[in-house]
Image (cartoon, rainbow, N blue to C red; front, side):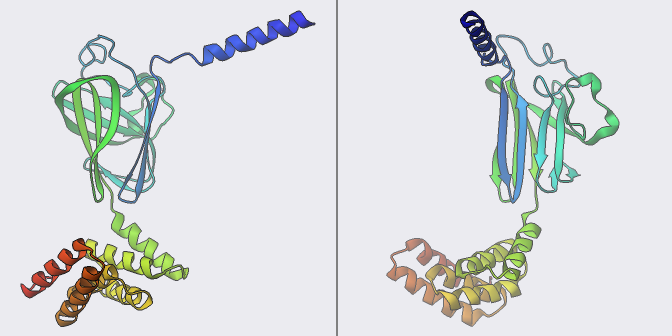
Length: 279
């Protein structure tokens, strides 16, 4: 009985050990918030290992799963513009057709494709062309996000000495305003929430009348130099220039007392802007 138990233990240990061996193309995962949209990428990451990749291992002008094993997938929590194509929220497989100077990047509805031979063109939802550029040597296939700004980001694919960049654009304004209105409806807003909502609307150049109401509520609930500054901006956006200057001066005084030079400068710049006819 002991011999059987020992043999079983060895078998289990051997199985676990085999499962724990390093994989030639380990799995990679990338999460990034762009605007208010969650973007998630799952892929397997092969390495160059001294091989010539593009043009040899990965043939030019041939469909490639953009990784190894199961196809690479990209998932969007909201609608995006992928390159110049509008894409609905959802999960897609990401395939490419590498070329010496230009790549074609494709998104496909089927997310369970193990090989290029199973790819069906009729399931393609986006097909865009991007420039291939030279870059520093990258041993392992890398997908990453760069140039994050407001609602925009670049998806960068790098391997060996080649890089391609795909612009992704989201629209956080509509979703942000919807979130604000829902929070107000639920009665969840406090001073900081009203201030942040007003600032968001002003930064986006939308709903300036509502932004003024939100800023006023924030100041009424808990007057701070930062909320006073937001109120001054909202007053200026609604052509209440005299009120805006007075509020900015009050905010600047409060910031000086708090020794917050950043808001002293911001209020001074706002007053100067208003004097020149700006908002």
